[in-house]
Image 1 (cartoon, helix red, strand yellow):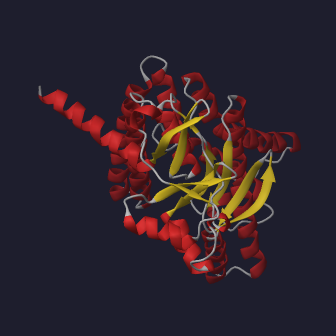
Image 2 (cartoon, rainbow, N blue to C red; image 1 turned 180 degrees about the vertical axis):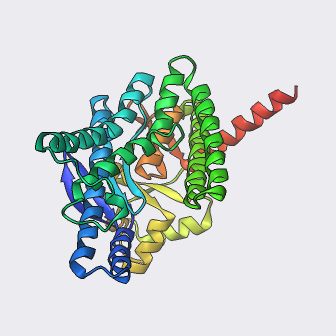
Length: 365
């Protein structure tokens, strides 16, 4: 993620922290000092937040490692002030697999809370259950961690997207009905809950309004994504690829590519090197190249070598998912070893528009 700093790597997964997380820590110190706490007490609050987000990271690793068991990789985990995000390549198609992946994150928090509670039980210490209502100290630190992990479980198990509970609900429904229908039902349930949160927010706590809006937007986004995937499942890559395209050579200058860009409709190009497709160049790459190197620099210096090769008979939904996940805008399409065309994101969006128009037309008949 842009503006993020890599802080760790575990099990082959990079962990990043977004720069806005530092604002959260600074705000905690400032607010604690303003409330009359000394510097040591304020720093204890920071340690508590860091421990909390450590639990969030473990939660996300629960999702990531369970997804790996089903052959789904996780590109990275990013810490934001509002929580953690595991960038999983895709949601497992089988409902039972999605169910296990969704439950794995909250299960980690249950395990953490269970270990702390077990420690209290074995030591005979009941803990300070007013931990979150008082400044964090060494005496109530673990009680606070126990309550926070219980809260994380309850919050994440709300049966609404984008919470884990929404995915659990979708997986359970998908065992009885199709994935698209299950997503539609889960999204509607999530939206109803979101409306209830907003209503309760006006009556009791203003923060519930933000939670409701967050859930409503997340449910809508998931429903739209699944609807798009359902539409694309009717196509193969070969149905929508472009047969007319320009191949540049890595030795061509940036100026040459810019002139082609201005003279036609293409905004992305394949680039050849050593008689094979070596990468791609986009309009943004060319603009940055002009700013950094000038017009005469060869394309090889700005070539994006993160190439995604698509198969002619691949499902378009799978191809689009891979393109969006990797951030690649244009891909070569092969039939066996033969290059037969290219696919870009604009092709896919046009296919969605056509399919929507056909569906709307059928409804009027």
